[in-house]
Length: 330
Image (tube, rainbow, N blue to C red; front, side, top):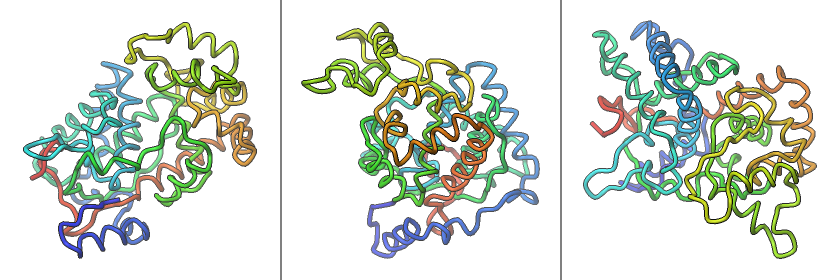
């Protein structure tokens, strides 16, 4: 995912990391910090619990930030870095401006809590803290808890330009989704499982206006959209409304991590085209139908997909370090 040639050797290494993820993720393992900072997972979990009690937005904000981080230059906490000097960082790319501040705040506070323990200070990467926090918010919302592989280093680069073309768009069809996820070493099954993160949180009216007003000349409203749901969305997002108005991604259980996301797709209630296509395309429909019936099978697939996602573009050796401050380079 890195594409900035400081030197040819760095570029070559980055490309090899992208195409051979097992090489990059070989250092990852459960209980990585057992002899370094043995209580790190409970420390992070306590901070996440406190933040969760303050606002539920902690959940979708942290989960979405992990996805956006891993899909751009790998899981290296580069999305947390602030712009400075002449560099515009990832977080200031237009595709990342909607990342909620509560996700950033969760990681920053967890990092401070970890570093407050003398033996842990500057020993745990921001990338690993984000991975642990993501597991914890999923569990707090009713989803599965799972062992997180750890041992990532923080990235040394964060540029707004690196985001371009690396995040799926709400308008994507199945071919586009599969191609993008495959470029990260993820299968169609992984893609469908990770898409279910849309069972939580919210989006904004400008992201779906096309589906409910200007889909095509013949069909102003996307015909794959449930008519009653379309009318409801038009009521929440009237023409010329403030595009920042938020609407729930899941109209039924927006605060619970569950398989209702897939049941919604069966009823034509996927908010984005990229959601609904998972059911309308016959190649992915069987998986949606199976997980709509079987929440346990979905949770197993989600854990596997999240584990694979966490291995994308992992930084090792001179390709990374442990940031003292998650928001700036050392």
